[in-house]
Amino acid sequence: MRLLTHNMLSSNIKGVTNGFPLRMEVGKVVEKTVDFNADFLRNMFAKVEWNALVEGSKALGYFELPDNVESSMLESDEFLHKFHHALLELHLEQGALICPETGRRFPVSKGIPNMLLHEDEV
Image: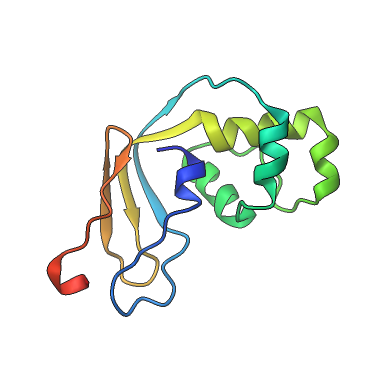
């Protein structure tokens, strides 16, 4: 599961008001090379919840993203390559996503998060 995907997921358990961002319990991380596309990154920048991306990248062992950003940084190739690596090339292969409010664990196996809810959670 890429951090791009993690940045869009939240806990939808009935009654949960604060289900984002999901914390990560890391079992295995893999890096997969993805072609660099600066235009894609510039378009995604406004849609990404930056603090969640930074925390997610740190959970996966990548500490190169700045804590604070501004749109002018999109002109820097160095910044774009770090953003690209964190967003698209780091994958949570095994582990879990954890609801910040309830502590409910959603397993991640072979890079696929299982976000299915139990009957009593719907």
